[in-house]
Image (cartoon, rainbow, N blue to C red):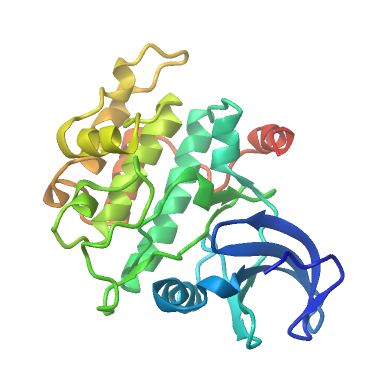
Length: 293
């Protein structure tokens, strides 16, 4: 399908304002809901992919998000099918992704990095309680709003605990953030998300990825090697040593050696911080974030 033009109306309800992004299987627009007079994000599946596993994943994202009500998770409003276009209408988030931040070489202050992690773990605790694990936690899927709130997006390859449609040996996800069991025949559970959280925490503390290189090199490292402790890296300011054990446990090769739940990892982070952690990212950091958009 060709991208829709500004002003066109989808399904007699959503007026297209502009194109936010274009991927291999779909497009995302900013639009206006003409009935409710509110901004929305519209994800439209390309017609040539509207079948088989990709269509099922598209349906799954709508179903997953519709059952998750949490301030740190993007809300889904509606799934639509016009006969030629399949789309999801979602909450529009006017935010900056952590990926954009990384691309500009930024490193969050420690208090803001911890705020991001706690908000993420709160969102995952909600998802896991509903029997859903995300399976693709990475900076591109984490947005920071102008109010400093984290929003988790893109549940397109989420695993639903009661579903048998996604075989556990199907490898979908992002190298460098995928847990070891994602590469093997071991059936994964919600702890794959906690491994991804360990990768993200490592990056937030150090500004560096724990596993780097080609896809095959990353896979080997994830399966066989432990990255150096964050506090051992020559950084200014240094990563506090008290977070090393939290990172190491989250990045454990065996799921049984990781945190059992998102709430447990959250408690460990709070204990290591040894001071109150902000519920949102600071105003000073938000000003910096706006400069990288």
